[in-house]
Length: 102
Image 1 (cartoon, one colour):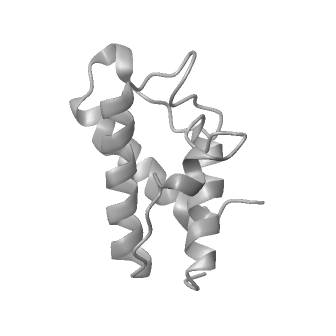
Image 2 (cartoon, rainbow, N blue to C red):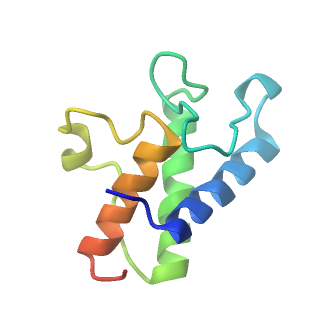
């Protein structure tokens, strides 16, 4: 699946918000290849949750879609949607599309 460009923009806006308050060692690059969580990731579990909440809020503001990114479905996937910015963008795009907003 190819991520919705607007979803990518919303994730990048959330990264900007994260970077404003992050320790310099936890700064995230705005790239689809940026590793978010797991081995080589810059986010701990609290940082990941904060980023996900920011993305969900932006999706609601932009599309009017109430989505839950960190749900059982996300946790049961063989490839974590939280691994990179790209996998997160693909997953959020899929949720928005399924909700009928794109």
